[in-house]
Image (cartoon, rainbow, N blue to C red; front, side, top):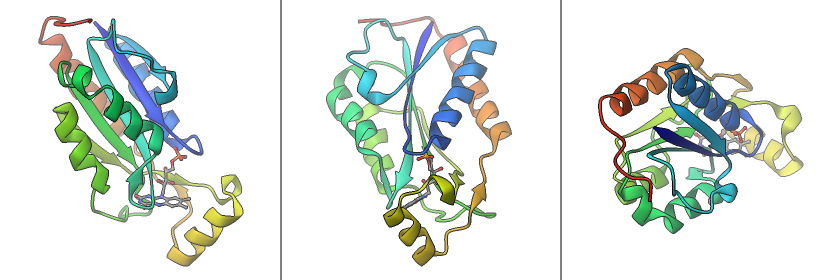
Length: 169
Ligand SMILES: Cc1cc2nc3c(=O)[nH]c(=O)nc-3n(C[C@H](O)[C@H](O)[C@H](O)COP(=O)(O)O)c2cc1C
């Protein structure tokens, strides 16, 4: 069973979440590959797909949105899981899901969409981004919960291992 983990990330935090998902799926005996959305030409050969994106200004990053738009038909034929990485602080805010997520879940028929807390490292930001986070008083730090990410990956593995590989076209 081959799983594509496609992740859109601007400053690396979401990419590391994608890597954690891939690694956990591999530990569970699944064949999993991590790709950026731009690298994905088609979904041939993949039995399931995990798509993740960092959230900026309430939205998924464009490459993740484009991936879903381009491959909606093929995604709808496969089991799909979505995750967003964005909220910061403890408790993580904003608490509401990014507004793209509902549409993305509908197009793909996603099994689940999960919001994971993210990381804010001012050193990695450009001038405009620093101004935004200053204005929003966004808390700096790494709020990613890798235990929760691993548990979610286990949920994915449980579902996939309970069903036969259905499609690879
Ligand atoms: C300029 C800026 C705007 C952001 N806007 C949001 C937002 O609207 N909602 C949200 O949940 N997180 C927001 N975040 C937090 C990021 O999504 C979070 O830091 C994420 O982990 C970054 O992932 P990346 O390193 O993969 O790009 C914002 C961060 C920055 C720097």
